[in-house]
Picture 1 (tube, rainbow, N blue to C red):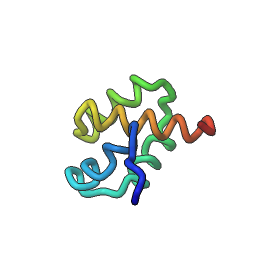
Picture 2: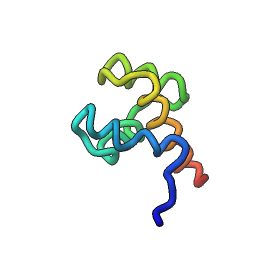
Picture 3: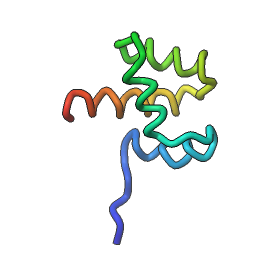
Length: 70
């Protein structure tokens, strides 16, 4: 039985479906951005790339947590 995905990653299938790009592409955008603060990155994804707040927040939270080794 597969484990249920929880937290920010639970949004990933719907993000890929809605925006047509793999999560790795979005994470690379976040990592390569000169912005470093969570809400700055969320606002940037929303305004520059058209993501909804929940999707942008999930991507940023997951990507920043990975960078911290969490």
